[in-house]
Length: 71
Image (tube, rainbow, N blue to C red; front, side):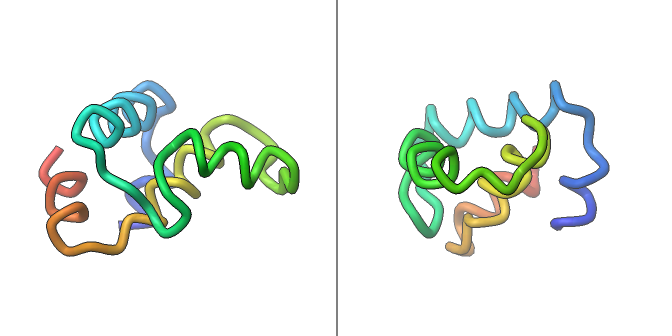
């Protein structure tokens, strides 16, 4: 899934993150805002797309991955 996300257009990634937020899904470090709080201070991601991909790849629950994969 990471390769598919990495090659997706920024608009698609933004829509996926919005969907994840609206469904209340959380990654390893919480939701999108918690992810940003953690990673903006340690920003290793040079652009917005890579941050979106990094967040989406933190989703580990099978049900969460099925939602993202089905879109």
